[in-house]
Amino acid sequence: MTSVLQLFSLDGQTALVTGGTRGIGQAMTIALAEAGADILLVQRDTSNTETKSKIESLGRKCTIYTVDLSSQPSVSTLVPKILADNHSIHILLNCAGIQSRHPAHEFPDSDWNLVLQVNLNAVFTLCRDVGAHMLSRPVDQYNRRGSIINVASLLSFQGGITVPAYAASKGGVAQLTKALSNEWAGKGINVNAIAPGYIATDMNEALIKDQDRATSILSRIPAGRWGAAEDFKGVVVWLAGRASGYVSGEVVTVDAPYPVTSSLPQHLANPSKTTMPRRTLKVGIAGLGRMGKRHALHFLNRIPRATLVCAFSPDPTELAWAQEHLEPENVTLYDDYEKMLEHGGLEAVVIVTVTRVHAEMSVGAVERGLHVLCEKPISTDVEMSKTVLTAASAHPKQKVLCGFSRRFDTSYRTAYSKISRGDIGTPTVIRSQTCDKLDPSGFFVNYAAASGGIFVDCNIHDIDLALWFLSAEKPDTGLKVKSCYAVGVCAVQPGLAEHGDVDNGIGIVEFHGGKMAHFYSSRMMAAGQHDETEIIGTAGKISVNARPAMDLVEMHEANGVRREIVQDYYGRFEEAFVREGVEFTDACLDDSPLPFGLGSAVQALEIGVALQESLRTGRKMEFRVDGGRIPS
Image (cartoon, rainbow, N blue to C red; front, top):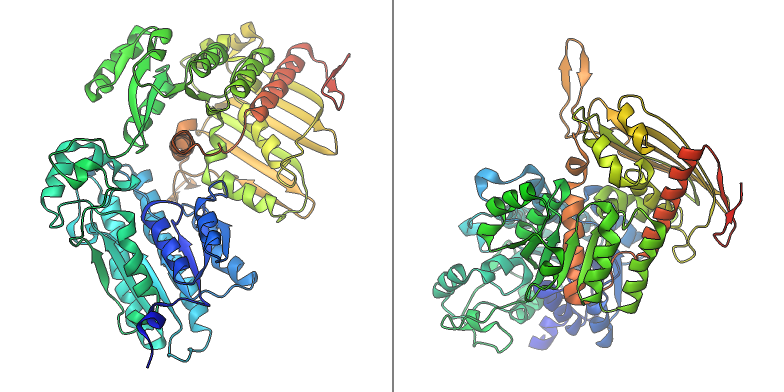
């Protein structure tokens, strides 16, 4: 007769896990390893190795696969890659999930689509592909082929408040689990789901911080406390192994009474206590112009681990906007930057002011022990930009990030992943453009007075992409500029000439070692924003946004077929800006590495300034390998 311990043993099995780097997912992943399974861990990148280290300390194997679950093409490559590496999958645990909170009548399409992609579309794709893999092999001696465990939610049944996308996605997960079980239970694949109750994790940060909601929820929990990640270890091992051999199509709720553990926040374990359950990053915003307002609203509403506590602007109009939109949310307003830096408890500053003061403000914040997220570029002056690098080096505990938003865009990250693994051979040429819709108001003419010029302000994104993509094969070696040459015209906004600037510019950059870049910038697009990149390698090429589109809709009319495109830069990269804030916040709170360093931001500015000088003088700027300028 089989012993009980054998029923729960996962020796010799391999589990594929998403969402295993923290919280419930990490606890369940480690539980599978403790029961004997090796782990294939799906992560956004390889910067977080905590779970991997814990698994390996148990004597189990752990392999990290990097996938962006918000990108369906990226998800679709995962299982084929794993199978090509000769792994066999016995257990699938779909735990990754994201949350977005807005009143239903204000819920943005972009948030809806993102939540459904990560929480439901990716789950189905992995279930389908892993299920096909399991069905392709014979049953074992126990008539089993494998186990699939999805993570649903109590909101699969209850719906929730201000979380329509999350509730819809988790309802879908519950029904998907039952549908797959109907097909596969008789073929040796058990498909079940776990529905967590109210658990003290990052995803519930907004509820936990709301003392009234938290207390109300607690009053409805029979156990008298919120759940903890450790509460999921037993159920996941049960569903993964032979012990649950005659259980399939079930949604198991983990919401029962257990003894209160000391690891839980006090006000969740005891409603009479008011201790804050989790620490959030206390953030201040410097600058409330076009982008400053958007950053402020992101940190206020869309970055769960951050709390916007203060904001600065010297502009009365911007402060009037903040009095309406930020002050009611307990955000303290300042018209003096130095005074804002003294705000009690402030931990990080997001700098979105005019470019010429970026470096000075960044250095001031770093020297006060604050983390800094600074909008690009970090200065219009190369030497000033280096002062930020020096300050960051002198204060290694502070996180200092330059906000190159495209590095956080799903499409660009997918392109980089493909290039870095050699899909197009050696990346050799990049053509990249940033083209704004024509603004007849004169905004860009006034803006040019302090922007540093079209190559420093506009093409700086494309320059950063060139440094990123062209060094993807050997990211530690970097690129050395050989020459820069630029030309431009004022086609629709002649006032730009007063500032030595243009509304259409083309820059050519050569790098030592045989690589080159072509940059185009424009302020006169008729249809809308068109930012496009093409990376050409020795074995292929990758294009990003070659055919811009707002959505998948095409209009077929008497004059032909047309589609609409986004109208401005923010419309194209909204989600990238949010992800930038999330990853910056995570790095500050977890003391984890930032996605990239400041060195490339300084080099990008050096190239932008050289192109701007070439534009104004008509000369080709040439450089030695050591970076020194060759006199022209």
